[in-house]
Image 1 (cartoon, helix red, strand yellow):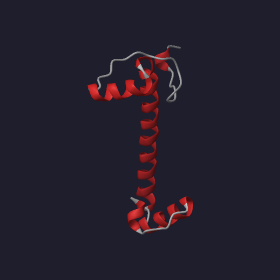
Image 2: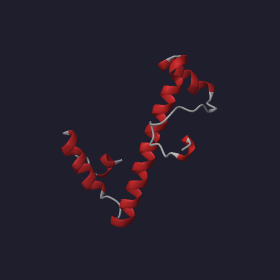
Image 3: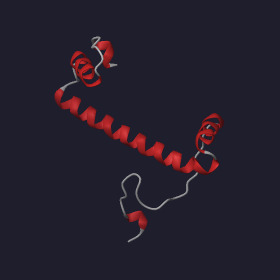
Image 4: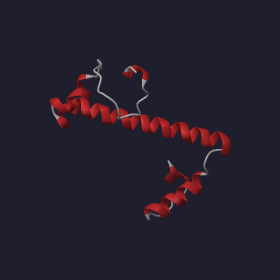
Length: 94
């Protein structure tokens, strides 16, 4: 079976080279953090985090479609319980 026929989850499977265009400022900021040899690993992790966020957004959208959006005041109250900070109403949910 060829590698193209296998579905690998994000972060798994062999590495594959591609060409990516970044603005000079973004590339410099990455290199400042990780050096020239760490750019690929940094971008791999960033892509994995973005995929996780996209999947979570889809899950939330599906939940909202079935159940309606979350009540901002309830979210703020639960956030306050979890973080130990006082609830300040709907603005805290943003």
